Image: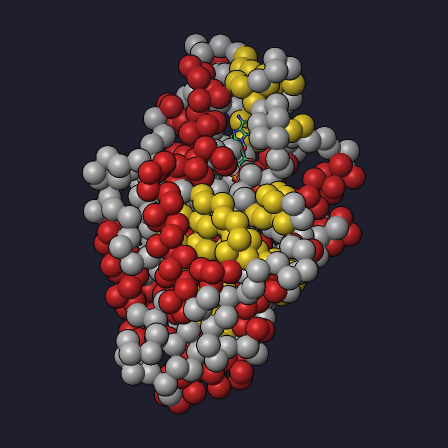
Length: 511
Ligand SMILES: Cc1cc2nc3c(=O)[nH]c(=O)nc-3n(C[C@H](O)[C@H](O)[C@H](O)COP(=O)(O)OP(=O)(O)OC[C@H]3O[C@@H](n4cnc5c(N)ncnc54)[C@H](O)[C@@H]3O)c2cc1C
């Protein structure tokens, strides 16, 4: 495995940003992979991976006093459904608590079906096979109703189920983490995913997010693989006549030539296109997946205290601090982003995993990540991120401070990742942490494009695609890597190889 960066793991990596302080470069909360079975299949615990469960997995504060006259009770989402419903009942009333219990019952199997679809190739037949059992359960749910639910927006789903705006806002903010706002069609399943968190909550590896990729590297080494850092692929080696081109390896930036019968490209699909150069077949050369215009702005803070939310116990700081109390806040932030502007009132999601992992910072110190969403990469008025980074960071800190007074004063050191910085630091084009937009039209068989959705590159034998650019997309998932590996292994079975070889020679002869 060749990696161009000097740090292993891309957006799943952790560095010692300040003496004794371990800070993630990308992701922090691992959600999807914990439902994939991959950690168990690869026995990653044996290779050093240890997850701390986020339980409670989420917390949403009451509106700031005076905003709506609320009595100030927070909403706490625990793995324990009874405890969660008790929290909802206290903050939002018994009817919404009962509705939430039923929501988890209905969406649990639906989201489990989505998990199965995420773990498989995205052909229409396979998709149908995974989703079909949902409707066949007793009492039978009519297929039309299920389709309306899945194709509808997260907001519409929330409006059908709940009455409390606070509860809807917390769930919508969770659902929006993959990018699209919950007003967009096809986003309902992002909200429905919460049902699974009462079974397996998000987790964070001890020592930081990079604990996962370190364990994967250790597993690879045990299997005889080798990782080279700081010497990535500079171009694909390609052989064969026009129309029957085949990848034979890669040349690295230092000039090393590594020959291989198969190359699996796990970088951004457009980076793979560049590596293929003039050898890119039309399916790759013409690929134009939607990259969007920026995604999030991230603050990494070393603090001398955990954020203190009035009336909230420290145990609630183990999960996602969903600092949103009304979906109008999300709509405004997204609206500003659509207009190419920095959100005037950013909505933060804070995480402070040093609350449950003392290896992240020296005693008395903490690491707090604040994620703000919908920050444009290219600004409509042409302003540049060098100038905007500091005021935008201050504004986001102030947004947390509103709910956790004293947070701003607790910040000792700050590292800011703007959309531009994310591109420079992690090769995330246009700052898109998911590589390609996560809207309905770029998911499943459409990701990254319909022609490239099978993990193969038609017209260039031996090249395979994986990573966030491919199904099922971004987030700490592992699914696309496992599926690509299965496709490679299937293609390398003797019968498949014979078929491919005959096809290859026929194409060469036709030329
Ligand atoms: C700030 C931030 C916060 C996030 N938070 C979360 C979160 O809390 N939870 C969650 O689930 N997801 C989160 N994500 C998203 C998630 O981390 C990513 O979607 C996912 O990790 C992408 O993984 P990947 O391996 O497909 O791609 P990448 O992480 O982009 O890895 C691609 C790798 O390819 C390398 N590369 C590029 N070109 C070459 C080349 N020519 N040769 C060799 N190597 C090359 C890159 O250096 C990189 O290491 C976050 C991402 C970011 C950036």
